[in-house]
Length: 118
Figure 1 (cartoon, rainbow, N blue to C red):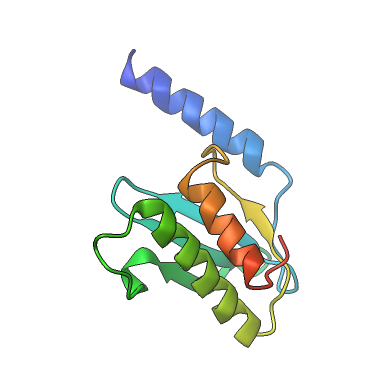
Figure 2: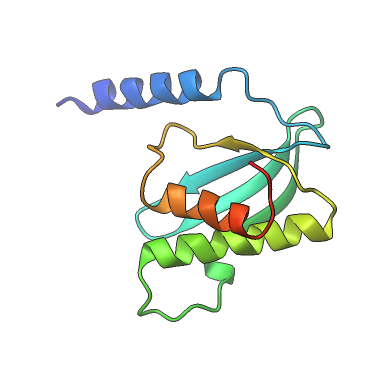
C-alpha cells in the first residue's frame, strides 16, 4: 500500500483517539511513544504545555536478555514511582493511535500496579 495512505490512516486514528484528552496539573496525560527498539512515556500538562515527568526504557537497569514487554512493564512501574514522588496519582492514558496490546498494555498495567490511577 502507498506510504502516504498509511500515514494518513495513522494520523486519523491518532486524532480520533486523542480527541477530548487534555491533561491538567492535577490529572496529566500519560503519553506513550513506541519505536521498534525502545518505548517512552511522559506525563504532560497540556494547559501549560509542559512535560512534568518522563521515562524511557534507556533508564532501566534491566538486562538485555529480557524481552520488550517485560521492559515496558518495568518502565510503567518506574514512571508511577516518579509520579507518586511528585504527588501525582491520577492520569489520563493516551496511547496515541497504538493498539492497547503488547508493550502499550504492559506499560499501563505496570503503572497501575504501582498505584498510578489511569
